[in-house]
Length: 267
Length: 261
Image (cartoon, rainbow over all chains, first blue to last red; front, side, top):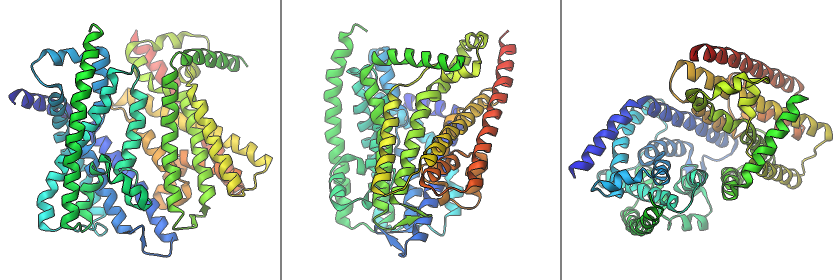
């Protein structure tokens, strides 16, 4: 356990050294938020009604604000590329030689980075909260508020495992960077980072609610913004935990098979 | 003329390299398409609730997205990967070789390799545009197409110039990679017509970071909706940016040259 805490501490220090990169990434999110709000604003101005796809304009602004913050917390950034690099260049061996689990090691790296990122993202977003204060719609009761941090933690673990699983493709494919780029686009789309997934037709939404991606970002946002019933809340947590289990098993299997292949290539 | 022959040779060499990595080829193509497919899908959903947005109807919006796809494909085909490699070339010193050659170093550094796969993305973009024209019953004239192509080339001038200027400034002033970040922000504001923005955002998109403005003008030209003065302003603005990029490059490469000795 101590070794992982060391990894977390080291990564916090490294992330702090690169604090301007974190600030700029958050600023980029702020600009994206402004672009999205401008678009939805004109859409609502054009349409006759106050509501579209079950959202009011304020509902959408609220959605995007929390989406960017939660997205920053759960986003895995360039972890996939780093793991793939470690595999390709053989630097994975350095980790294997130490008596630690790679899965836990990479997770500790992420935790270290996330702690610093969260700090700077919140600071950058404070002006946004003030500016959009009148538009933000939160609907949450006490129980949901207490359980919300857990939803975030589970979302973080789930996103981590999904990204780790995909980055293990590097054991089999020589060139994965372009693949990661598609993966980022598609996963973002399926998790609700391009737009709220419930504006899509009911059939499509039904499928997406069975997949793990909606529970990485969309579900935590809904806890804050939609008046979820107790049943919906428990179902969401159930899906998060269920998928964490399934993907963890897949990660272990992929790891076993991948590591055999890795050692076989004489690194 | 010399530069055209040189560019054709650069294309040939890149093509041969690309053929060696067929799988990567296909994946890059898919990733380019994925982004635009998502944009098109969003628009399809949006237009079930409204008929027009800021004067653009569904098929005109598809046309805009197709235009964005074409320009983006050409951007990735030509300058993009070359420019992203520039900071490393400066750090490793391999830029020296390009500064010593008898042709423009800016031309070589910006266009030395091409990404053949993007040509397929461009074809997909053209496909989207053609689909929009046919299904939207859009009347396009030959003159409109000519001016459309000219506007697309000028949109590329702007995109290239902004990126190169940011790259040069970032290298000399701050060690932060903000060329990519700024480029990302511009693209985000450009994935829909500039008409949807108002106030200060609109002014910034038109005069300071006019990539979206150029794209909007290009689309409007083909759709027959463009104002002649707007078109002329767009062309002039893009040439200003291109000339600025040439000046910034000359200053930067001189300073680089004197620093490394």
